Image (tube, rainbow, N blue to C red):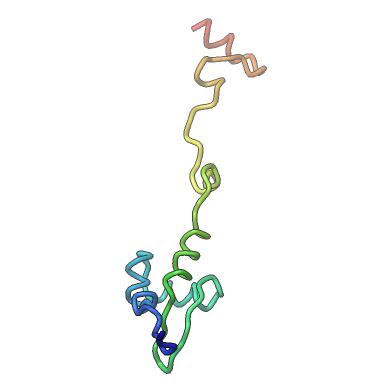
Length: 99
């Protein structure tokens, strides 16, 4: 005979503190994710809980694709004309050679 009143696994529910630790963010940031609708959470009385699969889904959706962060850092490599001393049309290359 099966018990129809089986409780779901308690480890499937995370406290906000546990979720913060897993994500490496502050409680304030976690609440912002919840409030913006990016992370699903449940309020039971005064307690907020997050289901582990929802947290995993959130983490997967936050994955950064390679090559998408170039706008966050300047390109510090010298331009090709600076590296090999090509003439840029201003006549400066001839002046450098004459020195």
